[in-house]
Image 1 (tube, rainbow, N blue to C red):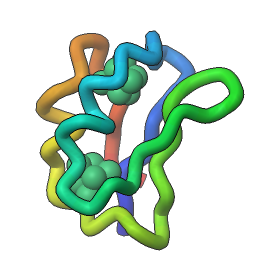
Image 2 (tube, rainbow, N blue to C red):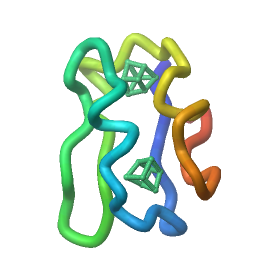
Image 3 (spheres, rainbow, N blue to C red):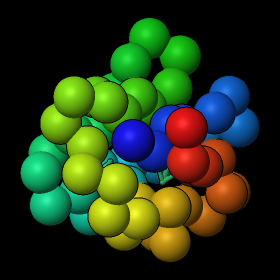
Image 4 (cartoon, rainbow, N blue to C red):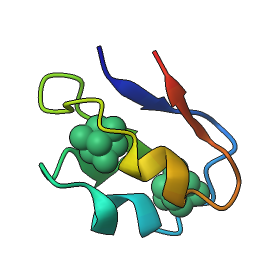
Length: 56
Ligand code: SF4
Ligand code: SF4
């Protein structure tokens, strides 16, 4: 399981700074989570100011 980032992401970068396994990178239109690296800890979801992160 992994968290996913939706289209409402405003690319603020807060989640990437919070991720303990460095699974979040800036993508073409918004930030993206690598599902192979994500350990589903939830830190990024709590950090997101626009609620763009949810469970896959
Ligand atoms: Fe990183 Fe945790 Fe978010 Fe997965 S759920 S992307 S491990 S902060
Ligand atoms: Fe996008 Fe939310 Fe991450 Fe900011 S914290 S880059 S708005 S997903």
